[in-house]
Image (cartoon, rainbow, N blue to C red):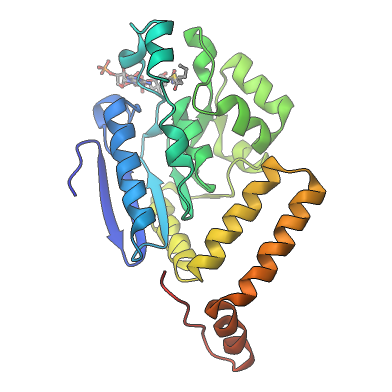
Length: 257
Ligand code: HXC
């Protein structure tokens, strides 16, 4: 499939998606949102893909939602089309997805990174929610996911001032899982994704569900959910294979679906 605003490349069981609107620092317009969603949903349905990596350019992961596209919209326009609602479908992708962020990840760009399962940051990465400077607030989950990721105080400060946070601060506060040299970012992300893609796909998808439940459920319910799905995994061939491989001191050969 050929797209206009993204480039897709399959590397083994990993799908690398590169945002590709260099003239607008990968600002997320509706075309890009539609194409990214289509590519993600196709990967979700493809048994040949076990993990996705979303990246941008050296200068910008994405500099936000497309301001020029939004500028003239009214409340009724925004409300009747439920602007940005399609991003919920992207976030709901069931396979693991990694954001590999170099340069600016601002506004919707930061929110897109937050929709991924974790963020690998280049040492050049800059994160922020500068919507306040435009007279609006985040609209793709920033006021919710950012708080859950880095806590209320820092999220409040970043959103109220619009200041940018560098990669070291992003790692310190838990927004980024790791910081790597910019030149190594994509290769590191693909290698990390390859490790994930070669585990049991069933176990990694269930793992995501369990970890994401930590955002939704009270602790006792979350612990029960975890225990039940842990127990359910003993009905899979992958559990038999993974544990047999350990005992027999050999690499496990997991199912690819
Ligand atoms: C549309 C954008 C854009 C954006 C950059 N561009 N960001 N176009 N939407 N979000 C365009 C510029 O207009 C310019 O086009 C080209 O990309 C290069 O950008 P420059 O500003 O010339 O680059 P530079 O001076 O290096 O500055 C980089 C920057 C700055 C600091 C990232 O571009 C910037 O502040 N961008 C906006 C960041 C932002 O506010 N993001 C949040 C958006 S709102 P031309 O044609 O002039 O060359 C959002 C959530 C919305 O994401 C939710 C509420 C509704």
